[in-house]
Length: 129
Image 1 (cartoon, rainbow, N blue to C red):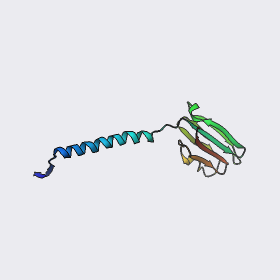
Image 2 (image 1 turned 180 degrees about the horizontal axis):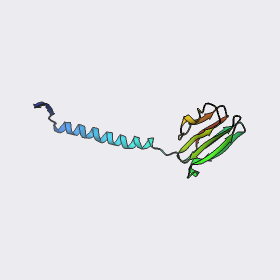
Image 3 (image 1 turned 180 degrees about the vertical axis):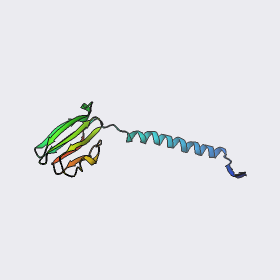
Image 4 (image 1 turned 60 degrees about the vertical axis):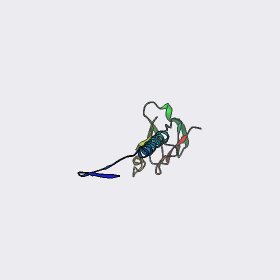
């Protein structure tokens, strides 16, 4: 039932209404906790695989990098520098003309890649099996 008190409309809750609201809140909290934990999966078992004009380099296990480390790879255009840490990989510097690979940002999940096409450097994260 709706009652009017000044400008506020107040809904009078019955016992059944409170029970339904409580159950909805309980189910919502359960789903938030159970499904929310899955999104925060840590990928400590990630491996960085790098392919260059000279062939495949690595594998580099991300969990083994306690501090950010720079890895240099030579290509046809010059040198590309990847910064690798336990939290992810990013292209720090490259001698390619457009620098698209640098603007790709940090990769941190399986299947993500950084590609420097002019310098023939392909960095990919895969899960450790």
